[in-house]
Amino acid sequence: MAEKTGVQAVGRALDLLKRLGQSDEGLRVSDLSRQSGLAVSTTHRLLTTLELHGFAQFNSATSLWHVGREAFAVGAAFGMRKNYIAPALPFLRRLRDQTKETANLGILDHDELVTVSQVESREITRAISAPGGRVPVFCSGMGKAILSTWEDSDIVALAKRVGFRPMTARSLRTIEAALEDIQQVRNKGFAYDDEEHVTGLRCVAAVVWSPQGEAACAISISGLAARMSDERMEQFGKIVASSAADLSRSLGGVSSGETP
Image 1 (spheres, rainbow, N blue to C red):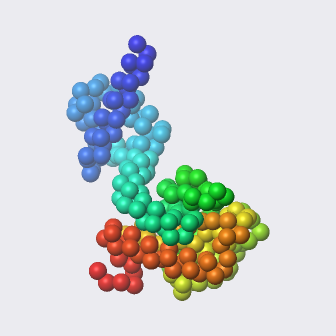
Image 2 (cartoon, rainbow, N blue to C red; image 1 turned 135 degrees about the vertical axis):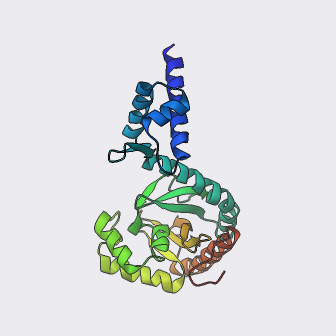
Image 3 (cartoon, rainbow, N blue to C red; image 1 turned 180 degrees about the vertical axis):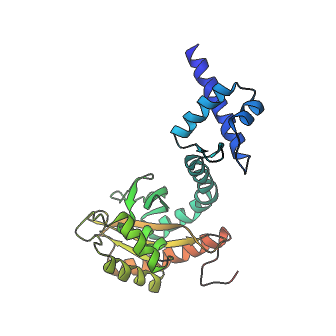
């Protein structure tokens, strides 16, 4: 009985959340109660639970309920998976086959770089940073590739907000060093993680553009530093940048330097 009641409560809460999502102006408790057929007290209890977890917001000035931040985050996560991960997989596989190293897809989330998809190298000894892992943005090749599309003032604001969290002796530690590094990314068209996240691991990355001409995500290849010499990093950078451009075009994306 308790399990049935719990499932029923979840269903009712999700129904209220969907109704909130369908309203641009927001809804009063009485409106939601009438639409859902629930008692006002039950409706209010479910809304406050959703609010506690960030899925609903209450505006005390208007007495209206709205969709909360977490609902947007979940929806955005679905959109990201739908729009980028599946289309990116053929390009990641091609990168893996061209370079023999692990290929990755990453996005910025809450000011950190998150790897959301990966195609592993077939080498016996390979570099792996599991999908779902979070990396300080200034320690990440994919993170720096995305930041290279930002204005310097926005990068400075980000550094003030999150600071520098060095992971190795090679990690960036000052805004001056970060801006210099990111300018090199703009000049080359690809970014390096030169053992800045994990000692012994190197990475080269490039940005993927959205149809709106903004950085949608980034792709990279990562491998053991012993295999990825400076010469190979330069070669791989051009390959990754070319793959990122191909993926951008497949998504309908246009970089700031191109015309639609």
